[in-house]
Length: 324
Image: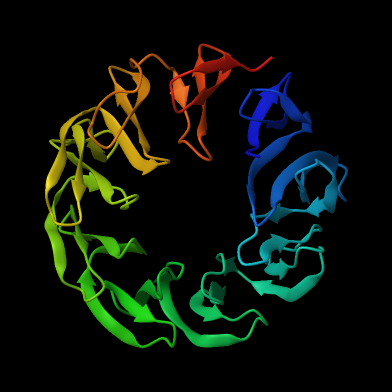
């Protein structure tokens, strides 16, 4: 059963695909389920008497599995979650298991999610990668680094300026000429050179040479890309433009017609036309007119959409059910 975070009277709970409350709204923050648990937060007084969020985890019945007590926390990945314990001066990240037991002591200034048994972690501003016991298996020697995905991670070596990719042993694989590099998704990775985005495969060869103003990852075989964006001097970034989709053979498969576009999920992609949201299929056909003020991606066959302040559950057939 899909459980979707939703808000009522200032509190968060979870609804099902029929927009019925399965977990009553009683949390101050709530996030999607991962690894069978969902991250939630309650506002509590800290040791200084100030009200602050304390993070914990619930199961799919809404039962508290790990008491909300962490100053910061992220969702579980491969059975571990990264957290910061409360208290003055405590700003180091560690990891807990799904019983709430501290399994990697808090000593890192930066951490990432586990993927393939490796997680990004920093000590003294130098980033490396640890195993599930908290031991560095790739020693800290990077100024910037991303999480592992599909056996590779994007990094900048200390003292260098360009991005490239390493394997799980920390060995250089290819690249180190990119201005920016992202994680691999479906065998392709986004890279940036001279302000333009392209895609490479896992040999480091270009699928699409950098020619797009922006792009998102491949998902379900397609990637959204933007063209004709213009530089805004006040915001100091490119804005506007039109979005379409490419495939991994380097072909444009959905024309650049949309004001915004996001990766496919459950066979549908969230797009914006004239300041309203809708969804398209892989042929570029709208599932419903663009009429939503806000929207989420589909997950498990459902998405959340808003018309004004009213929230609805949307199914793949375009049916909306008001959350009451």
